[in-house]
Image (cartoon, rainbow, N blue to C red; front, top):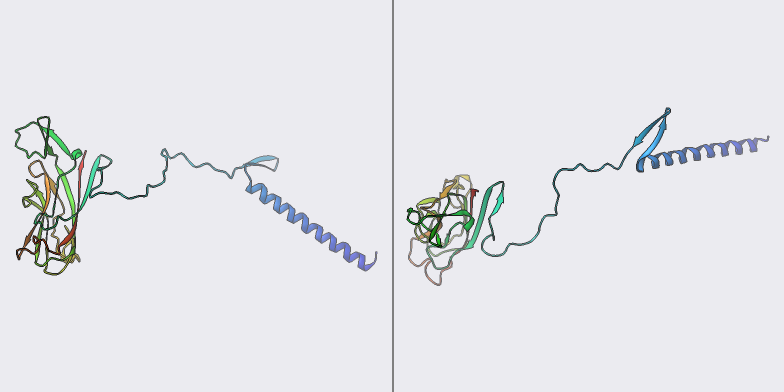
Length: 242
């Protein structure tokens, strides 16, 4: 055999060996990456399963609902683990010293016999419906339109829809010609622009079923005048155990 032929033979041998290794590696990867495979090894059988099913977690995952809720309030309280929660948000009534006044929704109320001394928030079929004990833990005021006078807010539980609250959750003073954002338990010391007081929670009871915000203006007409520039939005969160 000539020297040239010997080199060609060695070249083809190396090339053939490389092809065998490459094809073997490719088939091995395919066997591993496919579905269930039976691989003989030392006379035994190994089952390689790559398509593992997800465990049954006992619930169905759904896509989150995306959309908007219209109106001044949420349409219904939401119930989580027997905890009813209701959030009301309203633009403050214009030219009024009672910019905000609500009662809890019907699902927070209970029927009671007439004459028990509780304040009736509605009467149906001769029965007075009063408010169960309801916790209010959050009230927020955002005053975007300034008033021409210093205003003192008082928000809390009241016996009527227009009376100043007896159980006060938030008090705050907004100075002349300045807006304000404040909420209960957010004080100046904690970084609040307007001191909202330190009360964390109150109850709406059958005796005090209304949540009311009232204003006191230091100069008459700063809020009640029809040409006033006062604009505010008030938000309240209440909850009770069902």
